[in-house]
Image (cartoon, rainbow, N blue to C red; front, top):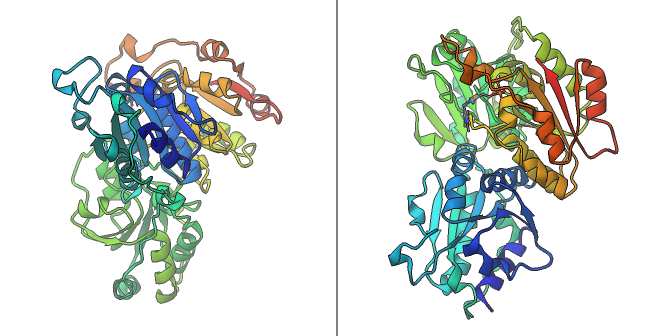
Length: 493
Ligand SMILES: Cc1ncc(C[n+]2csc(CCOP(=O)(O)OP(=O)(O)O)c2C)c(N)n1
């Protein structure tokens, strides 16, 4: 069998979709692309990684991409960084330069290990290594914590015949497994500690959604009368029940949690804030996580087990308390909150991919409660939501992309992929004419905070129907109309 045939045979065990944008060093491999494999073209290399991230979010499996080394890979760095932070497993296949000429550093070549943020890099040299490299790439990508892995295959070795047995990749190997059993003796000790505590707060994070532990979290919160706070800058719904999203500065978090003697951090990150304006007070934090890297970082006690197993096992061991887990917090929702409520009532089973920097609070307060149907990124990287929602739809889901006018312009050409592959995608743009999250934080004004752009004209050029409206309800009815395929609605905020 030829090396290229082996690559596609291995990939076929767990996927039929590769997102990519090829160059000359990928041509020899792609010549062998089998008919059952869809090569989904993105017009920007990085968007292929964003799409593969969305594909993972729908399937739970590793997302596969094919981008050009080294220009395509370096052009995708923000997406590699984002996937690393968001724990998204990607297998990034790139065509390396001629294996026998790398010493001469020809154009397009690079030492792939110099590419930052990848969780792993395998720079293959020989044909016989390829089956093992793919297998290892997949396993590294999905193991805890999941992340992006680069596998470079020199273009000159893909025609070689190899007699290495093809490694059969069981589909389950390409699936992330978050399950981690908890140590029963630790659970018993913790239950005793919780039973002795005066006031307990729960801080819930994205792993609750990943492990689908929403019901168990709700039950623990109600039994302990412990209010649920959402981790700052969450990427997936931490709970439908949270009373408050923790602020994006350390002092705000310290003050929100100051009256609790135990803080149970379930599958989230407390340090993922914009302003570390003081040290986080962490003495009373107990962290539960399935993420072996996260568990090593902080001074607090970290218990390595998955949130769902933890919650299930501790529930029968804690004593029911009197009182309430509801806090009377006044929340100002404003106009964006109203729009989100109107959107929420029309979403049915559509997931939302969100990138609205200055509207995070009202958006997350409403849409962030949607179990397994809210997605964002924790890296703060713009240009992710449109490609990721496209990958999610291509994998079989339904999605609405919710973006700011500035964010829209970080990835508009991804819309071409939606049109070219005839998928259903609805995009809602909250247009405040510029970069409000920067404009409002800077203590000076400058023209570079307010680029005037025309998202709708760009969207039309890529084949979307468009509408600008002041009438929110009519506009959202139009956006979510059944039977149509691609629409963009712009609302001025
Ligand atoms: C890739 C990338 N480049 C630049 C930034 C810096 N940045 C943060 S918010 C923002 C403005 C986004 O504008 P818009 O989507 O309209 O949201 P708004 O701030 O107006 O709510 C920029 C440029 C970033 N986060 N990511």
